[in-house]
Length: 365
Image (cartoon, rainbow, N blue to C red; front, top):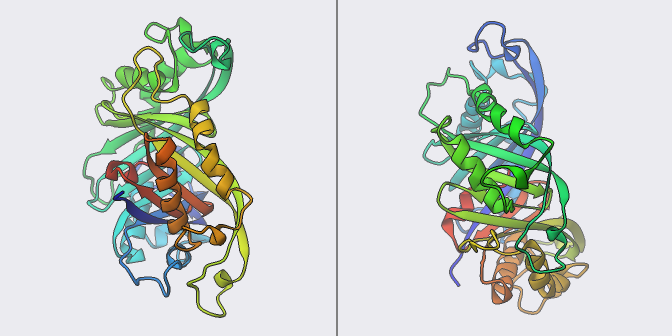
């Protein structure tokens, strides 16, 4: 199996700003502040970190040092027009990281931007609606065949054309485009909406795409959260789904040098995200049943949850990238639709391993 690994790190900072380039009266022209969260994804060269397995810690330290220049400061002193996109560009230039594939910046839990190595920018906004639904084609006795409901979340991603450094990012345009959707979806039964007779996460994502795209030509993909731990992406052509679990495991990095805390026996509550890609089952309306994903992956999960990971016989080392690669290989034996694994040892810090390079640039916001 040939796979690709990216190392991921995140770091938060508290900062104030005002964006004078916005229209008079816009709330963000006033002095205000955010709890920002920055994240980087890197295809790191061999031997970049002080030792094999130390990539995540070294990457996190580099990013923390970069954003420390902005922490508890007025960012206008560093960046003339400190919009989210310009902050992401500043972090990209200041971090000086090899193999940098993506910089993400979240300014609130409802909005952020993603900047790739070629300078292509996507912005995103998160929307929440309360709705009921049932899936009419599931096997008899399946719980989703009963009428039930969710607090759905939808993340709308839009591609930005090249901008000058002084140009503001426009979340308000996304809000205007989304407003008619919110009116249809919030406090509704999805099955009653034309075209949503079988409202799976996958069907809902493409239904939203078809209705948003005419008013938002820059739309790049839709992410639907059915629950906090599972959902679907649609980019106009392809569907992807993910299922997220946590595991509480211990480890010891065998390759860490003497004196390193990573060489000591320690542990994490890992966040593990499984990404799956397949053809849509037209009758059922999904790629794979989320319940089946959990059941089919469970034998692998039992090997790693509440276990000393460094004692697994065929695992190269207890570092996050090695564990993620091992999970991907073992998981594909029972879940051939599995194309990627994200494994985070702490919030936003870990490794992303994929057999599908397209999945490496598609985080779940």
